[in-house]
Length: 163
Ligand SMILES: NC(=O)c1ccc[n+]([C@@H]2O[C@H](COP(=O)([O-])OP(=O)(O)OC[C@H]3O[C@@H](n4cnc5c(N)ncnc54)[C@H](OP(=O)(O)O)[C@@H]3O)[C@@H](O)[C@H]2O)c1
Image (cartoon, rainbow, N blue to C red):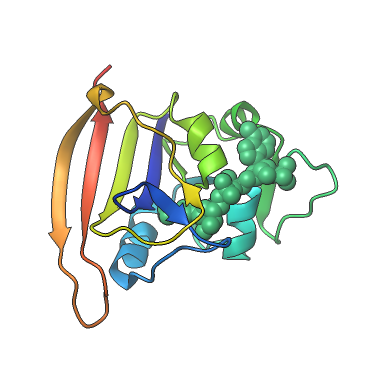
């Protein structure tokens, strides 16, 4: 099973603000959908709450330690990351879609990082964990300029683990 982290972050590593994404980048959302379609998603409870529903066409597993937590219809709950991975062990590819708490745990296990690097620094209160970039090789890098629908420029980058 390949475990891929998929994240959008700014130059300071910011990924979230007040429970939401700090930007609106429709082409990034479209790419997220196309990339993850048909695969398994693993996410934290807060990210699940910010999405608010099961994303169609993908099996979703949400992590929560709270036994009283009720996930949206169609979303499975697991009590930790290893339990979530064991539950979807037959999947070819699993995407860890955040937030910071789950990225922190998944980094050690991840085979790929799919990073939308936003070329700006924006206000926010949730950050991606520190990455040892020496452990990763950049294998794709595609620039997307700011335009009428995107106030910020960004780059799609794919890294694979070297060590
Ligand atoms: N830019 C991006 O690509 C991106 C992607 C995703 C999210 N975000 C943003 O990130 C923010 C949310 O991130 P966050 O770090 O605050 O929250 P989060 O990681 O989405 O959720 C945290 C919660 O997940 C559960 N959890 C986490 N690790 C667990 C583990 N190992 N075992 C069991 N349960 C675990 C806990 O739920 P309980 O409290 O229920 O136990 C924890 O409180 C939002 O602003 C969101 O918009 C950004």
